[in-house]
Image 1 (tube, protein in one colour):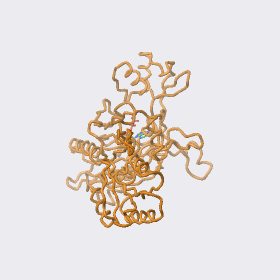
Image 2 (cartoon, protein in one colour; image 1 turned 135 degrees about the vertical axis):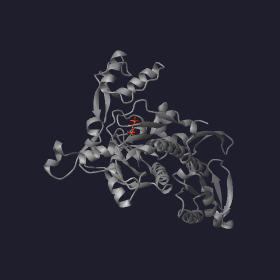
Image 3 (spheres, protein in one colour; image 1 turned 180 degrees about the horizontal axis):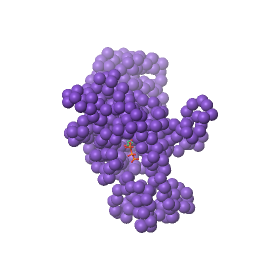
Image 4 (cartoon, helix red, strand yellow; image 1 turned 60 degrees about the horizontal axis):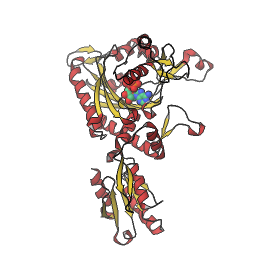
Length: 469
Ligand code: ATP
């Protein structure tokens, strides 16, 4: 069985199969932005819905929010993003290609067989390391001095000339969780919440990433699914462990990712307000190894303290049990939806050696995705384009589409159509043939086993419902 080997192959396959397209291709492309096609969008929505279900429907302590992408600009001053949300950049003096200094150094040492972690190092520290070790660009050229580069994407809002002055800058949110902190008080008041509780949100975030050449792993516009859990500091240890296990369990059980391809990585150096931080990493073949997909961080009382200070509002919580007031502490789980799509596709993509209908050796590409996540659940395929078969097939589709996302395909040979559905992960294909017109039965083919079963149309819906359960 073969898997996807590299990013170029991955990108070409994802485009060819209507999962992900590079943005603005007719204008020559637009770096670090991608568009999701029919199957990609359905898959992304399924992953998003599974996350919301696990957070909100399956629990009693997490609520959901949809806040604006634009927020009061002071938000980003209070959060520390205006002052310090930056990566350190170096430039190749000859090619003028830009690199993230921390990544460049890590790769340079990796090529020498040494493992170093440059996370959270300052521009000065990174500059020192580059100098002392005489580190060059990947092309072997000298590098410029390293400098910090703010990642917030700026915008302007309003309709007067003053809107476009520097004082009226607004920001596209750099992370979705800030919207949660701003609405924390409304949630407590209007839903009468008691600690501990969480607020979850899914939405777009924007960052001026210095280097974004890793397909949808790192883009300048992306989607985060973040949950902020408000709690008393004394419960921290137990809750942190609970969330670590819950998140790892979700990736394995709900997204169908094998345990060996996932691991926790503890941050070596914590950001000043954090008390504990772990990433969950996935072993991306196409990116050369384990890379972060999710962060689980204990943020202490930093966020609410900062927003209370900058807004002049009281954001503390009255504990009725003890009659005291406190600023709740926050732990977060923060995962990139696009990285999950990439992970699920990479994990599921499989090339199998098979023997085709003519007895010849062949390769079958099959997306062995969890059935719940499959973009299309059932494909309806008339054996031929004859009008009586089309009519019967559409009848069958109309029965199934009430409960399943279906596709209808009558082009090309039946073998080719099976393969198309295999490649986008459709768990079941229903074939309508000439016998159907007499016996009212269809053939159901299973994606993974390729076994076929004859089922009466009157029982088809119940049969498939059972299969999905
Ligand atoms: P990295 O170290 O890879 O830049 P980060 O530590 O800055 O990521 P966080 O700020 O913790 O990431 O964001 C939480 C999650 O959001 C990440 O685990 C990742 O899944 C996702 N994410 C962050 N930046 C991007 C991006 N540029 N493109 C796609 N997803 C992203």
